[in-house]
Amino acid sequence: MGDETWVYGYDPETRVQSSQWKSPSSPRVKKARQSRSNIKVMMIVFFDLDGIVRVEFVPRNTTVNSEYYKGLLERLRKNVGRKRPEKWANGFILLHDNAPCHTALLVRQFLSNKNITVCPHPPYSPDLALCDFWLFPKVKMTMKDKRFESILDIKTATTAQLKTLTKEDFQNCFRKCQERWDKCV
Image (cartoon, rainbow, N blue to C red; front, side, top):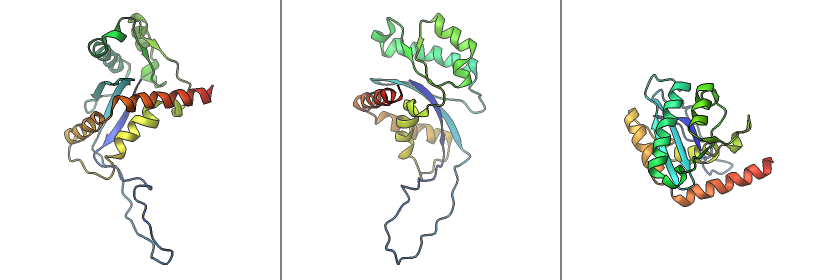
């Protein structure tokens, strides 16, 4: 499974995180409206039942197009061969969304030539994207309302948060995904 997301130098806490208990007679709490910072970095993560296979932060001023994504898949393929040799023997199955760079002809040809099977992802189905409903919120929730001064600080904090996830976390994620697929079907 793989997907990408923006990680911000500052991301305000959610409404749930900022909620407070108060009595009906107490005055309404005033909060300044806050917005995300301009410092941000795109993170691309690939993982399986056993954990993270590859994390890559996209260099500044780089567009994730079909050429970049193909290069990323080549690096992923090497990681799978090194980290998961038992899965390497028969090729592996990749689940990613229908982003244009994922479905470009160049990428489809590369995947076909390298014996990488792509699990079809139904369009307009973010509830079936493991990264969107599990991984990214889990990583980003602990980073909300914290300020990072540089992209290096963002990368360090994000990488540290990813390392806290256990093999059981990933297995539970795939179990929940199976339940969502069953409901969809």
